[in-house]
Length: 103
Image (tube, rainbow, N blue to C red):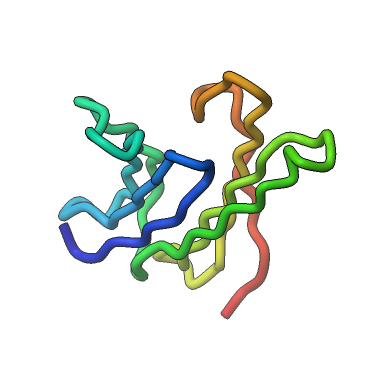
């Protein structure tokens, strides 16, 4: 593990993201008392540790948003946004990765 980013995405929900030794970003979540057994590989090839931020917009009737940012091997900053409605987790229904800006 080359670095880690963590954010709180719910009252008892913690999400962590890290840059693995193969330069792919991975994700794992916990519920306040235990971590999920498996982790999700988000893929890509990155040169920076990810940064993550969560917005609890569920109070406004919108889904919770979780954004992850990192710079790829091509020196482009990428972001992946996850939207989670009530009772949903982060999964394959996430929004697509998009290039944000060349750094």
